[in-house]
Length: 254
Length: 254
DNA sequence: GAGTGGTCTAGACCACAGC
DNA sequence: CTGTGGTCTAGACCACTCA
Image 1 (spheres, helix red, strand yellow):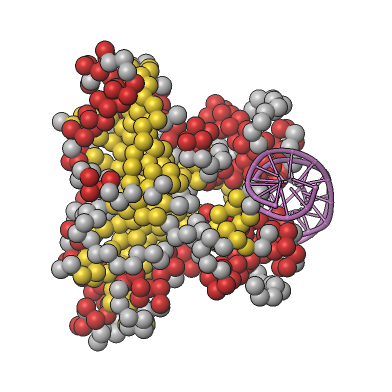
Image 2 (cartoon, each protein chain N blue to C red):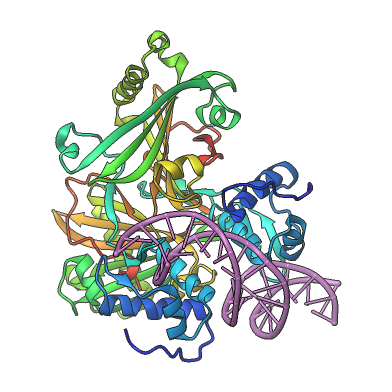
């Protein structure tokens, strides 16, 4: 890596530092390579370690860096494009190293918040299936599917957890894509999801909320938390669309 | 606000602090209210100011807080749902306090990155329209629309910037919704977008990349950066979908 | 001017990976 | 054990808002 002296500027040091690091990474490092450690970098650029870390925080938020305790700071691979909400056309998707893995299936009374999002009364029984989405061997998302038990009377007598989960998933597939509507927002992983995603609490995630409607009524709700560092969510008819080298990110804008 | 003594736990102090603050906010503060200042909060909880700020950083990332220099820390309003990618059904949307405002329109040679995303050769001429999306008086997004000049020969002779912008926008509308495909990922606002969004550089944003295809060819690309703190992006047939009180966020999941 | 959040420092100790 | 990133501290100064 090049020299280090930061020319005096009006912008914050950590922001300028981020820019310099970004330039350096693009020029001299490749995916997976470990960068010099934080104490060395901070010394090289003549800043406190905390300031350097602030710059690294930014780059990590952008998905350009991965930091592993005990190992070092690595240049991250480009984000994986993860299809969201295109109808599962059978095996076509599963073939692309894409997999869902059910974690558990519980049936319990709805909390106040959950009841509100489902449009039911607090305390009503709700089936909840938790599952992980795994793409090319990496866990990219944790999902909770909530279906009011009232809509699935035959499941009430099913004791086996796996069977109940299967019943819930089948029900959602039956609903069809026409009644789905989605939202995406930024969030942080709480302890439960954080553990499933194998990340520390507070990890930034993209929260995808799906409402499944049937006959004008809200039939189920799904909440998926995607790792924001490694995922790029893709929407729309992925088949028809043009497939240019879509590696670049917002850099194209400026 | 209640007392402050943090019970000893295994999790990081700042994370526990975040949880306590969140509980306090929900219980004792309402939207827009200013919280005690950072020095007082850190004293009350018996932590260094930097540690408290780490907890506030988390809450700000979740959109629960807004911090204004010289003013204080405020409890944020719930995120605004912003429709993305549903076809502009004429005036129906504009009526809902929704507005686009063109900033400028330039025509220049494509950079390497832009050429790659557009699938053209580097250096080819590209029209770029920058515009802001304003919802209920708040600027929520900055967008750059890139259209290769080759596809719009009649625009080459148009001198007036506003006329050229109009031509580009008309062209995109003509393409129709069938050829659109989108992706969403997390990013940070660079200086240019940051200024347009009236936020400091490094502000987290949701980057929406739209590919406009026509006749199987990529005809244009749009890059929109939405303020992640205030926006919840909504997709799909917003009309048909159920409209339950959709205020709650990921809290419903756990 | 006083009061706020934003930046930066220099140092300490902890938790984890790998030899 | 050494080396890494993760957490936390106590203090300083700056940039901004508002009376």
